[in-house]
Length: 294
Image (tube, rainbow, N blue to C red; front, side):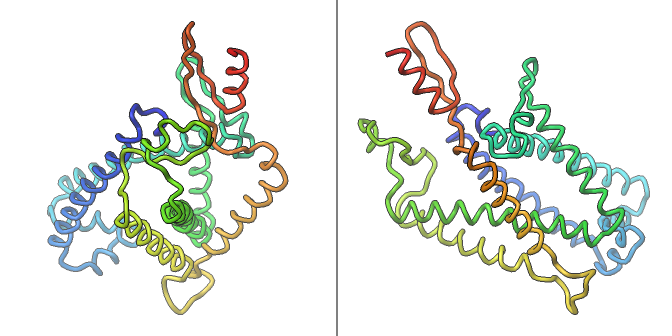
């Protein structure tokens, strides 16, 4: 979604920091308030709503003492969840569309279509809506299988973090990322990595980067372990199986098909000739345009 934001190299990092600080402070305050009004956590977990996975409903009822008061508080939680789902839908659909535009997904030509009148990737939005609904239906047949699919999210998320953090740490330590002033007059080296305005230079950046790598590896490793003992088939953590299956599918898909079509992220820029502007979306298009101009 950063592609749709002006001055994204500054706005996006500050938005991430601000949302982390704001949500962290508000979340901490809510946790303290809930714990303060919860006399017995085990009672809330064993209540009629707790066994269904919603112990906060019993906590709200005990705190307010009335059905109306607890219903209002529950409605607020539902409204927040609905609003969050819209944000998640927008984010996931844009990610799917961007990867499909780069020819990195099966059926990329179909998924990457954008409606001309609304400029919305409607196919990606539909896919982001239907797939979670289909996954939710798994819970009707087997809660164990449903939890196994959900566990894939944790391991995959931290795997994506660790991969990018390791590559960034390697580039930091080798000095491969240059400052803008060092490449201002150097146009002979293509595909250079240049620091943006939002970064932590020097040894402090390396230390923070290294800590993030170690933390991510620890979380990734223990995300495959069962949460309770003794381990049974119903309580087994099958995220290692799910993660391995997705990884094998991605490898086979790349070897068989994607390596022929996926050439990396498509860089969209705007060239401004003397007669106006033209938008192009890949290096090959830039070369063709420059050769025509020449």
